Image 1: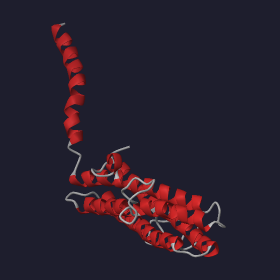
Image 2: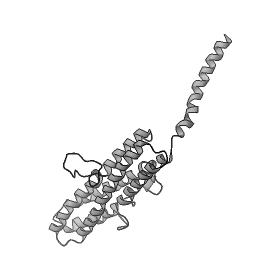
Image 3: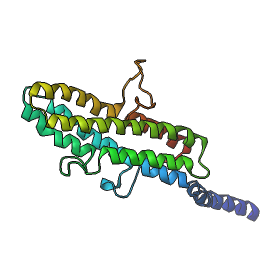
Image 4: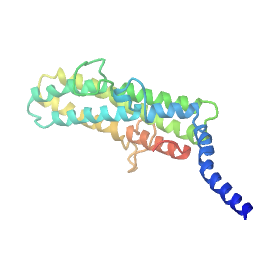
Amino acid sequence: MRLAHYATSLLAACAIISPLLAAPANAQQSTPAHAHLRHAADEFRGTPDGAGLLPTANAEAEIAHQHATLAGRDPLSLEGMQRHMPHVIHAIDPTKVEDGPGLGYGVIAAANGAARHTELAAASEGASDAIEAHAVHVATAARSAMSYADKAVELAENIQNAESAEVAAEMLAELTKLTDAILNGIDADGNGRIGWQEGEGGLSQAVTHMGLIKRAEGIGG
C-alpha cells in the first residue's frame, strides 16, 4: 500500500518537475544566428519602438507609398504634387529630408540592416540549412527594395524640380509604381508571380522568406 502511494506521489512530482527541466533545454536553442534573425524580424535597438528592421522598413515604405499616392490626387496641380515629395523622401531616406511624417529611420537603412543581419545569421556558426538557404532570399529581396527606394528618391527630387504639372505627373506615375515595388516587388519577367530574385522581390518577399526561416527554426510568432 505504501509502495503504491509512493509510486503515485513520484509520478505526480515528475509531472510537475518535467516541464521545469525542459525549459532550459528550450532556452539553449537560441543561437547567435537566432539573435541576428531577431534583429531583422522582431527587435533592434535604435529603431522606433525597438521594432525589427524588416517591420520598420515596411512601415516606412507604407508611408512613402501613401504620400506618393496622395500626390497624385490632383495631377493638374504642380504645387500639390510637389508638396508631398519631401514626405516621400523623408520616409525613404531621412538623411536627405530630416522632418516629415515618417518614423525617422528610413526604408533604405532599415532594409539594408535587415539584409545584413540575415546574412550574419547565415554566416554564424551552427546556422541551419534553412537559415542558409532562405537568408539569400531575404537579403536579395530586401536589397532589391533598396534599389527601388534609391530610384524613388531620385524621382521625387526630380518632381520637386519640375517646371510643369504635365512633366511632374508623368514622373509621379513612375514614382507611385516604385513605392509599390518597394513593398510588393515587381513581376519583372512577366510570369504572373513575384519572386525573391534581384530586380523582382520587395519587402513582402523578404518577410515571406523570413517567416519560412522562423517556422523552420521554431522561433518567434
